[in-house]
Image (cartoon, rainbow, N blue to C red; front, side, top):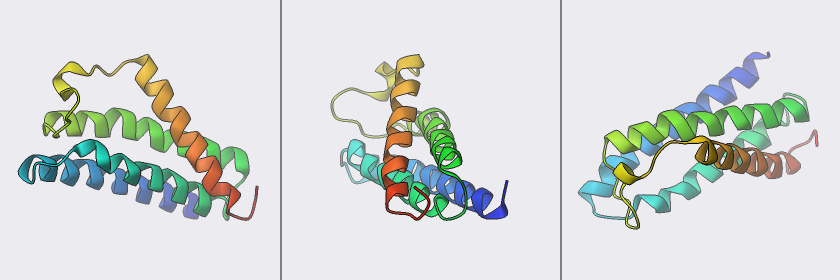
Amino acid sequence: MSSNVVLILCTAIVFCTLVDTLGSILSRKLNFNYEYLSILSFLCYFASGYFLSYVTTSKAVLLCCGLIGLFDSTVCFIISQKLKANVKIIGYDKIKLNFNLLVTSISLAVLTGFFGSLFGQNM
């Protein structure tokens, strides 16, 4: 695995972690709907697909975007749950991390990363 791929993957993971951590805290303090920050996750998947398409194969792009989505839907989900993000429709205490949530999140990350890679050079 090239060092550029690892750098892009780590940058995306750090970005998702920061968005979820800071977003959870700020959503409570400033009383805004945390769900609005999901656009930043999609932006991260899109940008990751775009930049990865310059340094690796299309299959690796999709795999990496899936890994970012897996991280975002597990670790970042738990972070925002523990920090009690302000979710308007239903509280995080009622949302359970399950297989359907994982599959949906990973699929959306892969799909968004794919669209990002279409703007890149290798697809």
